[in-house]
Amino acid sequence: MFNAIDIATSGLVAQRVRSNTIAMNLASAEVVETPEGGPYQHQSVIFAVGKGPQDRSERGVHVSEIRKEPVFRYEYDPQHPYAINEGPRAGYVKLPDINPIMEMVDLMEAARAYEANITAIEVSKAMLGSSLRLLA
Image (cartoon, rainbow, N blue to C red; front, top):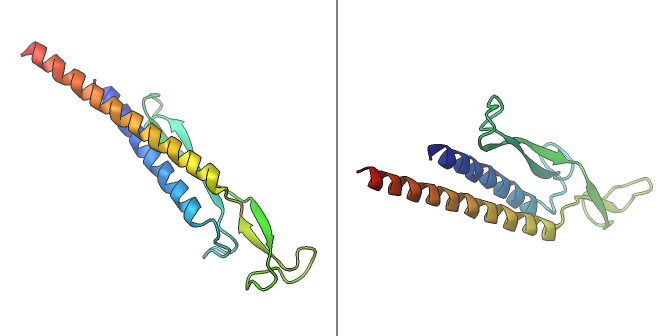
């Protein structure tokens, strides 16, 4: 019973990290200059089995990596302060290639997975309560 709750809790944590990452992608979709230099890079969450890097029990899930994807798009705006000055892309601004529609779909999927994990915890708690009542 407690294993099911632990597994579902690990799913809650993983989906929360995923939701936060998606929110960061949406908020940074037009950021052309980061403290590291260059435009914001799209990030995606990679899950792995187990509760952490050393856990090989195959119980639960954890975030193994938040991967940066250096994929960009170019928009013509020669007046922009970050427009490229010379070369074949002169006048273009380098922007993150973030598709807000796909990000929203991913966010809805993460929200549904989060809700499913909450339901699994509630069902496990109800089963545990029923078992205790039978034993009492």
